Image 1 (spheres, rainbow, N blue to C red):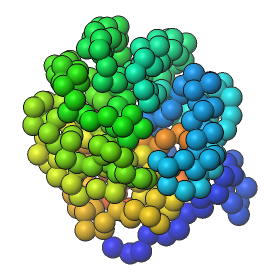
Image 2 (image 1 turned 90 degrees about the vertical axis):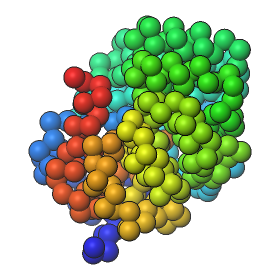
Image 3 (image 1 turned 180 degrees about the vertical axis):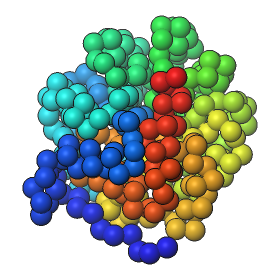
Image 4 (image 1 turned 45 degrees about the horizontal axis):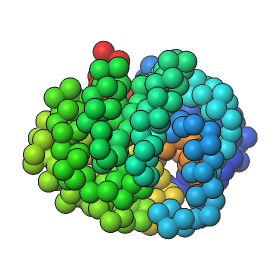
Length: 309
């Protein structure tokens, strides 16, 4: 494989050197690969006061951030939603997560309201290992939640906690995917890495697990889990980008496995909390050189199969 070309990673939302509006660049990407739209399973919409605290944490380069991390889309909610439309994103999520007990239920209430008022947003929910978690997760599923977020790194909890065992069982039974930040990037947490989630999957092999960030930096180990369990998928969030490749490069020897698992790789971006333009994630996927059929599957078809059919 030829060396991966560099792509611009500045905070501008126009193409450096051309001045082209970013929406045009994204439209060009969609046209090159015959995409009817994008399905992005990893975008963050949260209550404003929560999002501001998240941005402040990134600004301060907190211990889980791993270094300087400028926010490209530091905009009001309506402008961020408009960008999804401009980019041709036909389905996206409101990934939110608690860092302590007592937060998840009201975050879920906010997310349900956001999904109701925002066309294209998949109703999203979250959870934390706490008394009552089984009940509010069940209520969220029965209320129409399409996707969950579990942040093992920020929540600093063990996914094998006994309080969560019935939750994983509910999700497996209902077939509702859960995007889980369980890899050790950008900085390891107390319970990150493939081991804890592997133990969860041993108990719940039908769990529709979406490993966030391709499991970086433990890419190989999480690909192993995807090969072992049919309902394990991986999202591309920040993977392959210049920002991540400098610190946790995806091993070129594993590109063949990406092709083999092509129906279980999903587009994720981390919008708006990314230190580069949205189009760079798309270009990073494209420059892997795995072909338009693979790009179409990752950026639209696999997500549409899960959520739009």
